[in-house]
Length: 302
Image 1: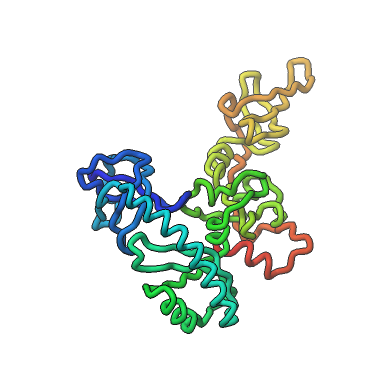
Image 2: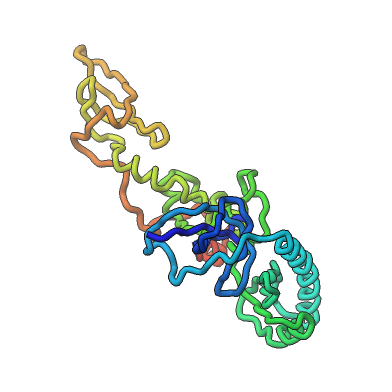
């Protein structure tokens, strides 16, 4: 076991583990840490805890110190300088007429490097741009091309639900999302209704997926025969959300009686459970007025 603290460098950014270095660090403290990029300013979002060595990337970097008032002021100054760098870089991009869109700028805490994040349709020859930027800022320049999901995370905004986008507010990592999740959750298969601001499948499709799978493994399909506390009957409908089925049971006088029962109250006699692994290639999308290229983009990188 090893003692670590979790540090985040951006709001909703990925959490990295560091060795607390015997410092008294608690959740919410600003810290200065050693990273592969150099010295960085971050916030402790997970207090000291013990985890197995298999869960950390070795060698584990150290927390150098708690951030001082001077460190905080320098961090804020870097943020102001990033705004200036963004404007300068946009002007240089226009000057060189490059087919790229600048998204964000980031100074390392020690000012050893400036990272410019951008999107582009394909590869961009930005060698002359780098020379211009290096002449202006007199430090190491890195231009990093990102995808549409990272762009949405950096810019932020409101999702189709009206709430702040998950990726920009609390999701540290992107999780794989597939169209079969929408199918298994009985959602609309119209891409415009299940895609986010980034144009890709919404991350929230993954939130309840494991629950749907677990329930469907115990949920009899319609027409299955089940035993109930009221006798044997036939399933006429089911509900994943309610974790229940409606069963038609013959009464002693020959009448049909409909009972709604929880899945733990019944047992399958014949038939199948709802959960069946889905092949994405067999799913037909409700693609109204959407061309093939747009569909491919929607399903890529999820």
